Image 1 (cartoon, rainbow, N blue to C red):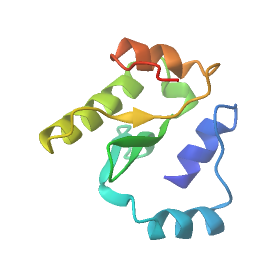
Image 2 (tube, helix red, strand yellow):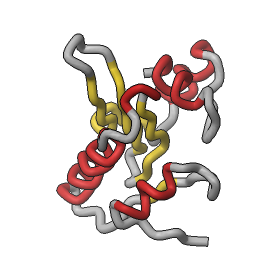
Image 3 (tube, rainbow, N blue to C red):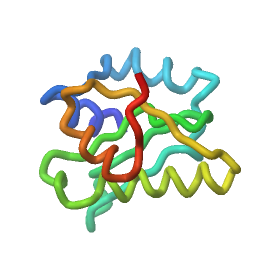
Image 4 (cartoon, helix red, strand yellow):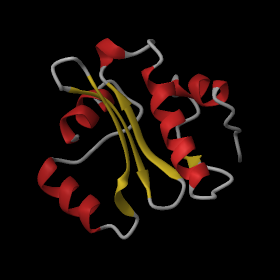
Length: 116
């Protein structure tokens, strides 16, 4: 999971610390819940996309491997998260993103709204 996040954020839009700091911080966070990790793999089982969400309805990280972008994978991962949180009774889901991040188009396409 860390390798995909590091690869996806290498070109901008976010960052992750080194694994030795990242994993303990994530695993010990009270909002961390493995049930809110939505993943996509290729035919060999390699992780190519992930929506890492918090226990609260919040997308912490959405990352797709560069060669898998623009194929609907990010949208599919978000839809999985939306269904999960909807089934729990949540009526909205949040995320934070830089205004110049190209993913903003994806978020708008799936119905997310910009909140100042």
